[in-house]
Length: 395
Image (cartoon, rainbow, N blue to C red; front, side, top):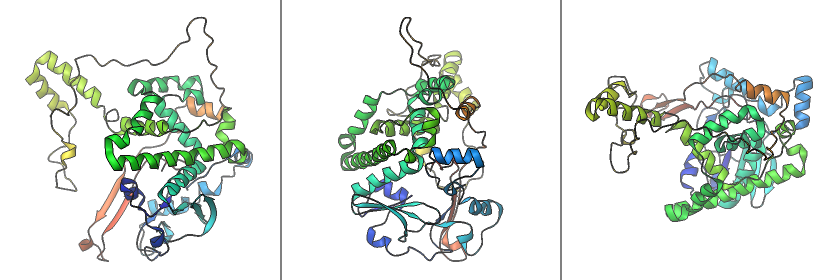
């Protein structure tokens, strides 16, 4: 997605490389070999409704937006791109594009004719954020719904009893209530000042855009993802708490729980209890997985954030053996009617009980080259964030 609006937007602008409407009118580079290019494993992907799904089950036909970048992607991973890059990547500059246009207030969502990538042009910041929420839901509402339920430990509501164990694991790591999450988001202006106020306003407009699409889809079934019909449910309204829960999911996956820091802390506490503080620390240091100082590296400059050291803000040590797996499964109280679990379509049940799609996982990668080392004299970068293969893509 390409997002454009005039004001500087801090971290979000850095992520999306936004430009002002005036700058958007002129190409940022000559198409073909300069500037920014990108490609997805399959395609942008857009909502597949019940009619599309029925057609796929009957004929095998796949919507074009789900595969229209596959040929480019296959070339990138099997050949060495040279010269003109247009045969390997799609042009992702900030040049004005033409195509199918949806107008939302003072913003426009323009999907280019070849790849159907949404480009958002907003006269105001709030209008652009609203349109960004709408376009995101337009392409991947069910994926978003599945992610928020994963974050909140409520996938059982979609997939039935087979998902109870996964929800229990999630709630054992993170179980802030919607009220607590909402309060945390709403406090941004007080905790982060002007930047926090701007972030809150952005998020509120983004959420409003998501809900605008949800309402449109509930009124027009052709806009509703087919998964909802297959699972016998409908999407509920989006909230700022949902977005905050997804942020916590990322934290759990890639930091504390993703790296097992809580387990490492437990091991250290047990070693020190058994062997004493000094010897226990020495054994822990010997066993701990750390960067090898003698290993080859791509950057010699130290990064203090990787080794913040001990201090009043460092993690509180755990009491030995205090870490207990939590079983968050809830049984009905005798005499209380249980809430019936949804009956999933056969294809959904197969995916759920089989642990999902068996896909390989690869690490992200990046190659950065200084201008003095490139033939053109310009710095070059080739980056491949690996987040798995989805259609629509998760990013």
